[in-house]
Length: 146
Image (cartoon, rainbow, N blue to C red; front, side, top):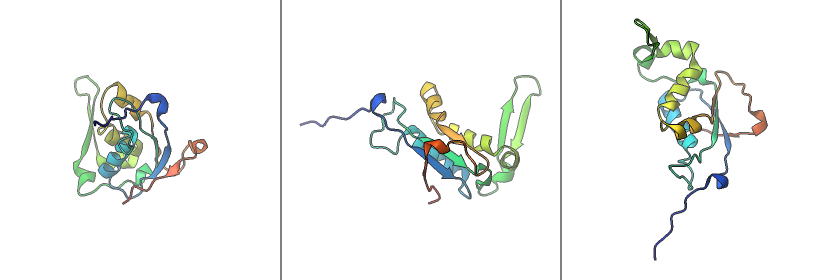
């Protein structure tokens, strides 16, 4: 007797809202755990070709922790396409001036690329401070500091 594998259908997916406090959690560890939730890999009904993940709100992105010497050695690059159009910013600068972009880039690097990945990425909301706009969704507090 063979067992049937259940495939999640888009109409059957139940999505939850989670809120995560990023204070003193290492950046990579936080990003990987958020990516798992966005993809839906934490659910028993995970299906690789369907977006079955949940919504994630991240607060206090400016207080995320950078381990080792990453604050000085890790760099973020952007290229405009013009000659001399390379812009380089260190992690310390990103954490101080652009904490939302830093966390979003880390999570984007850990989800699949393509149409499905962009759909998953849209369920991420990052805020530098403790205030957020999704109070009406009544998000559950998720502790990722363990």
